Length: 472
Image (cartoon, rainbow, N blue to C red):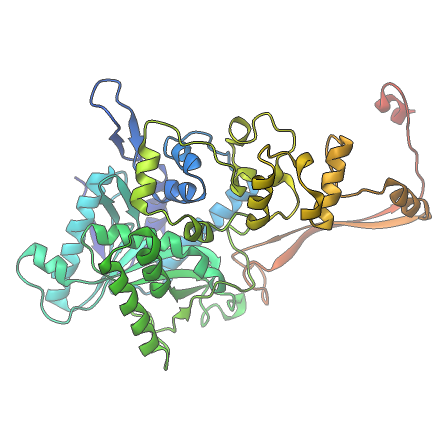
């Protein structure tokens, strides 16, 4: 087995190679129902499957078997690249602990979990010998068929020397669980469910978690003040994570007590603010609203869905491991699901989720009133003005419904225009790493533009080759 290495400071190149190795490494699988030669090999239940299953049990079942995987778009790939670079930046620059341990890559889940436990014990013994804490990067926790890997865990200072017995020594230790997410710090609360999954799994493996921290993007960062204002901001999500575990992920008497203790500790520390356990910098309080880009801003809020469905991790793991595919149930996330054409949208020309700006509450009401899921059968009285325009376009039989329902008015407006016409075309984007001074992370930047002047027009209404008419 490859050995982990303790270092004083993680070199950035090493962290980059580590990140790539983990991304490309093989994932552990388990044996499904049955023991014969035809028994299905089912991947472990990880955070990705969990997030899909929270939105839709059937989607989680497909995700666990790597079916109907949506190919990444160019913009999605760019955002993922920015997120990976941000994680490397945080792990390389945040002073998490005097000592660090990098977990070896390419281990099976069971081996990685065993190695993690060994490195945790090593960190406890090192503290007893030197009084210095240790951060462990990419630790793995395996609870049955549920696997979670944190970005880092940091040993909290012990109140007294640990016992000589290894098991008791680990029980005496407490850990801060850290995740790095490329979201603006004011939006960090939306990542509570992701962090709660990791904390729940770590504690199921016997780890004692002191706090749940999320390193997010600091909206106050500027290129000209980078030496004094870091790009990242630690956000304490302990209270939110504890409450979520107690209510939904793993309801138990112990979880309820832990949630109450976390809330009491937060109230006690509210006066002077809490200092970062390793950095000495203020830890920002989690908020659920605020300005700034979010890597999942266009997706349905999985945290709110989790609250509604109230399914534990054990429930979702069991459903996604079953031999039978869960029943197809129409949900709003069907809109972006690659399996929808073969699932809830099969045989439907315009499903309800195509309606512009349809929310969860309205969607559920429309489904209850129109089980066919066809936009054409929706009650216009229940729709907003923009949705009624779309509904009317569907009834007209437009191949690609638009929100315009008064072509004569459009013709009148266009007919009132006089040459020459001037118009501006531009492209913009938001970057996590600002390239210029005075620019905040994710601030919209103009990347290119063009000014156009139209002083003559020609409309070809040829019955054949329009290209030939253009050539003439």
